[in-house]
Length: 492
Image 1 (cartoon, rainbow, N blue to C red):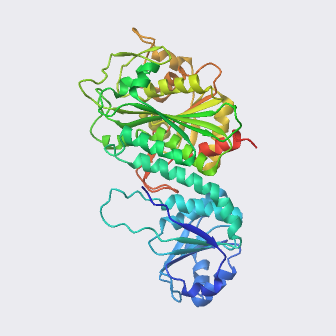
Image 2: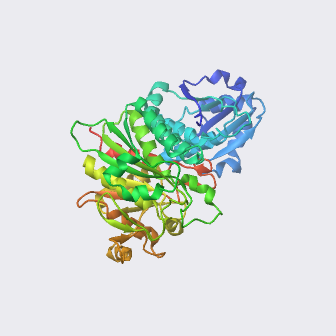
Image 3: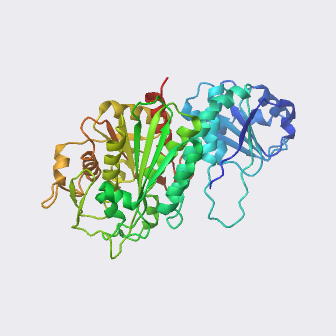
């Protein structure tokens, strides 16, 4: 699918800098700019580098930002990127510096001089570089040249490579998530999605695909009702990673995987409907996290479950006013067929708890437009019944720079779901829509089960570039969930 840029680590070769072709990125601590590499480049440029570093254009840069010099006099390179990065820069600033380089990559080879930086900072820089260099091009017919290899010149290449290895595993999980979210629905059918997940058995994951006949026997009427109007059969995919102690309860991740959401009979407006190819974003994040855990050999037991359906209008499609029965046994009056994600999650969450008896569960879904109204595209909505799990997740998200904000819950919101003819309705009105959706999901969480619901409708896909991603799918959540599992659930 996407082709990540190749990054290698080696010791600096300062004597050959003037003849280095392609691109050069120089990391500069404004407090101590005169590194050996800077001195050699400045000599070749006859003082040009010193003038650039003393200019207002450079001195006003924030950490992680770049001043770009095209075809610098005295150098064979086609560009010189001066990246402001203090030695004591934060992780976010180091990743931002890498992203500045990743954004400027071309098919030409790039040399990054990081001699003045710490090993950990250099590893984080390579991570940011890789994330921002991502480009989704499989459906473009014009010849697309791969980005040139990047050499990160550091004083301790092996140490930096060791620190970068687990970050590379996370990056691949992010790329996998982005690829899934970016794919059009005529390519990423429920069949194709399940096949891509099954292929991860090669990484050591146990993958099981539950088909419609099995889902019917399990009583997943809520999930099956969503997909009954589509030619693509509904599926549930179970991915297990056994990296922890044998017998320890796993941590569970559950994702909504609506490969296309027309709204069903409650059809959406035409404007913007093309973006509903991303309505499987929650399932994509779960898949990306499971891929990262396997690639880095996480010492934890984790199970990832995704409900794969397509919500289409058809003569067989679910109607507003229908009543469906969930696997739990509760009946649901379907007021709006466009509130389908919570129906999928209801059954998969119950199955996850019933079968695996997890120590905790987090579900993800591009669930409501209401969360975008509340939080915009900067933060995911966080809903929980457990302060400890919610706090641990928020801490992990903050450490990874992934915006998340906890939202309220309460009985008054839950009361809005009362139905005249069934145990509950699937919507509770327009006001507080993201919260009533969370309250609906909470009804399918067993007593005493620590649970977090993440509404990623505003963060899964963006219409403009972000620091670490081009416009389109972001892969939001892979980094935060990987860190949560690393910090809270891995055996030490």
